[in-house]
Length: 430
Image (cartoon, rainbow, N blue to C red; front, top):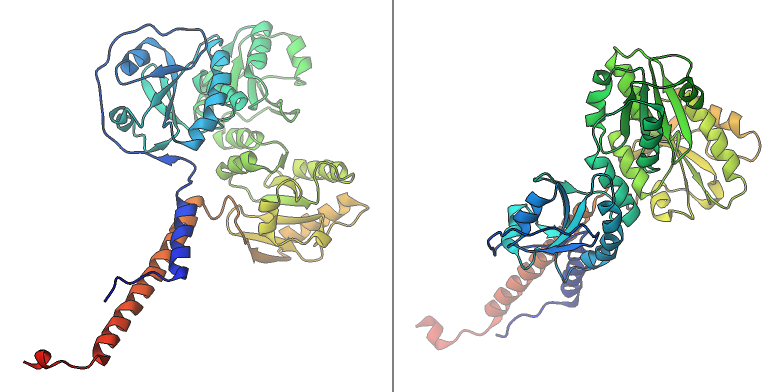
């Protein structure tokens, strides 16, 4: 009897498994290989250095801050990352505390990659005076620079003058919120400076003029001023500073803008926030003439309801995300309350925002939500925060295995049935 052939359905499932599982966010890596270290001088001209197992340890020792890309030449993600690193490298080298950018072919120097736990490509690591920390932030050049500047900064910067305050704000850039403590003891916020180091800049001003008080609009000390330059927002906390719960609530709430424009980056930021999300879904959050009015009213509601996160998203801007909430275009604009996991709620009688008095409609929506007049629904589709990529891979894999088992089980029964139906030969009974 010949070798059994797979039916077309099994072939299709196996091919689907290969297509879905193989192109992951990072490419797979092996371990092995090696070499000896030798000393050499690291140039400071801003180019990306190519390191190997012979000079890597020397580079780590010579550079106070070394940002390393462990890559493989065949990895598509690595190829796309390379020009971003080329763009970021001279900027990072020109910082007051320079960061040297380097890369290692970890597919060739497997032992080196294995030493630092490289199991996929690209793997990015920041070596701070020899201590490695994996970097998982944005790989886009400008955001990469902002993130690395933040990572190597002190948990809390101490500012001694108005000029130091201005320099601190200017150097911080637009990427992260800033917390400026005027007359605030450093010991009161150092814990939060370390805890939220990856998400905000922290400082205390020891000496400042009345000009700073006027500029940042506070009239007494101690005062902790939160500034979000990207969204042009500012808020002030006057205390109590001896109650850590109140202080941390202010800091945590200030990490996000008052109203969050939903995109892949901001959705990730919501993961660390325990509040539910009041989400306004629009047809288009940019070109729709009503959108600015709606967002302005939503901002006012957010100011008065800080126990909730308020956000908005346009179907035209992120259809993949909005379709998970089963919203029809005829129902837009609409509002829901999302738990950031598997459920969302609609408020009975507030399924759609009609043109007119948006403020009253949003108030009724919030009143209905707090009164429990809601209908709970399950999030469907492929929400990026619900069904992770790994879960999809596992699901496809299990389906493929099940189909294969069913096929071979059926094949075995067919072979047995064929044998049972064959005529008995004389030698079989001898």
